[in-house]
Image (cartoon, rainbow, N blue to C red; front, top):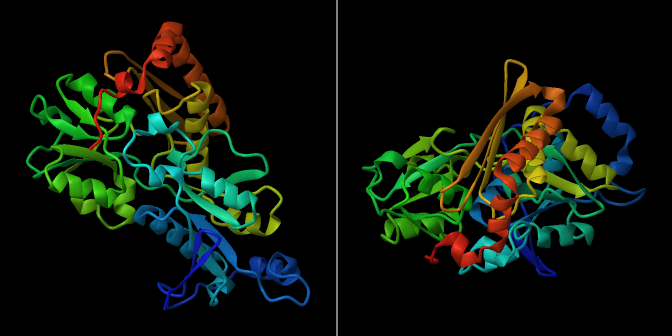
Length: 371
C-alpha cells in the first residue's frame, strides 16, 4: 500500500509499492563502508532517517523520481526497508500557470525554484530534475553532482492520425503545438507557412489536445515517452539533421545540499560518467550564449570512438536566421569544447542578432496563441 501525507504544502509519498522481488547483493567494499560510516544513516541512538526525494508531480517527473529510487535501492538495499525513501511531491510555478508561454513567465527556473527552496530549507534531501529545465547556475549551498544514464535524446514527431511521417511531409499551413522556441525555429526554417501555437501542459494533456483536433501535430522528447512506456504514441523519431534536441534533453540530474555528505554518498554512487560529460559540454555551450527561453538554442554532445562530438544551433524564432557549429575534442575538455562553441556562434551571429532578440516582445517572438 502507498501512503500519502500532506506536510507543509509538500505531498510526501512513503513508497512501499513497486519493490523488486529480489535484492542485488551489496559488494564487500560498500558493505565495509556502510559498517564503518553509520553516521551517514543515523545519529547515535536514533532510528535511521529516510532519504527524502523532492520532485514535481507530473507523471513524467514521478517516473523519474521512481527511477532514481530504483537505482538507489539497487546500490543500497537497506533503503528498500519500509519508510527509508520518501517521494516528496511539490508544484512549481511552471506547473501551475499554463495559459502563458515559458518566455512570458520568465524562462528558466520555473520548474526548479520551489524544489530549490525545499532543498535549502531541509524539507527534502535530494531533488530529481529533467536537466533541460535546470538553469546553468545553481543556488548557493547546492550542487548537482549526478546524472543518471541518459535516455534517447531525440524528439518524437506525432501527427494527429499518423499519416504524415516527417516535418518535410507536413502540408503547408499545418498547425503545430509546441511551447519550445527551439522547435518552432527549426520547423519554420524548413517551412515558413507552418503555424506554431503555444502548447503547455504535461505529456498526457498535450496528447489529449492533439486527439481533440486542437493542432495537426506536436513534438515531444522521446525520452519522456519512453520513461512512461508511451513511445508507441510517436509517429516517428527525428534525427539531429531534422530537429536538433535541446541542451541536456533526455538527461536526469540529481541535486543535493553541498554540505550533505550522506546524500552525496548516495547519489554519486548511481551517477553515469558519460552522461555527465556530455551534459557538461552542452550546458557550457548554453552558458556561453547566456541562453534563456527567449532564444532558440539547441545543443547535443555524444562520445564517439573516445572523442566528444558536439553540435550546436541558435536561430531567430521565425527560422529566418540560423547558425550552427560542429566541434570535437578530448573528453577531458568537454566544458571547454562547449564554451568555445557557444562563443563562436555568439560571434558569428553578431550583436545585432541578440539585440533584436532582446527587443522583441513575447508576442513578436512567439507569433503564437495559447492552446
